[in-house]
Image (tube, protein in one colour):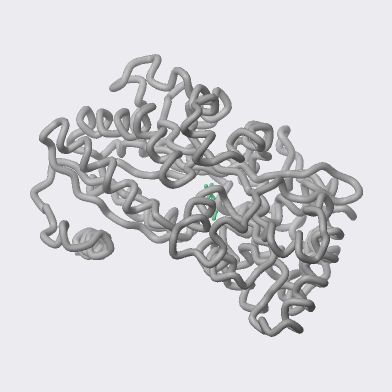
Length: 422
Ligand code: GLC
């Protein structure tokens, strides 16, 4: 029942051509629906159907990574084969590995050749390739080129500069009649997206990465505390109070309608901001995120992969669909049409890709040096670690705790989680 309604809600979003659910289909794939994601997935799937004559159903899943993980955990722990191909977050291979097929068995030992080594390593658990890289992600800073030029500012390099420019431009724009204008929007809801934003604040100000590569908990330090206090000061000043509940799409909505000077988001927002119905088309620049006095710019490493459920009744066919969707032609199309970062290294030298998304070239280092969340080292405890971290960051943003109180309490919580072993 649950599956059918999910399928229907996914199809409803896909428009009239899919009005009749193909419940007889041989395969089911879950796709994200952030921005143009679902449409893009549908196009890829249709191309594979046309080429092979097989039939696939698309299931749309919640946009919030945190909610999507709960859904997958329910489905997989029931050993249900309802979804054959799962779109999984870069932080989940360790959490879900036991439920996923080793794609080297179905696609061969070289299945992931040509993809970024770091992602292949991330997706390889106990020598099993549990997911094929589909697209990578890194947090970037969007800014209004027109407004910065108009008020005589260079793009910010530090968080303090961002704060100052946002304050001034917001005030001037409001004075000029745009009383909806805000300085900075980002993802402040208590979910995985806030883990990414807060990791960027902390790492770019010398506060570390919550848990280091050896598994040591490092979050209780003065730089991390200060890095959480700074954004708390933005709320209600240059960032709307509502940002405490923003995911990617709410932030994009404000920026794309012309009501924010700066936005932190993932690359997908580029194509949509440049689209015909965008208020800011042609007015947007994309640069690396700012840093603080004690650190360097840090972009959280994101991205999504395609995995095959161990409970699939059609593992070979499901693997073929995964190979097609993660293959070069499809990754190139997704990059050009919708700014999804390829995971195939050679596509970063492709002229058509670079023309469509110039910052894939200018920010190449940002994409290859993005800071990983501590999912590999915390293994199947990562979900708890991330929840504890985003709740701590949210408490500071909401004004309920100081940065110092939050990181000290978080240190205690993480120590308790660590006792279960990671
Ligand atoms: C993006 C990233 C993903 C991250 C999520 C958080 O989808 O690709 O890795 O977990 O945002 O909202």
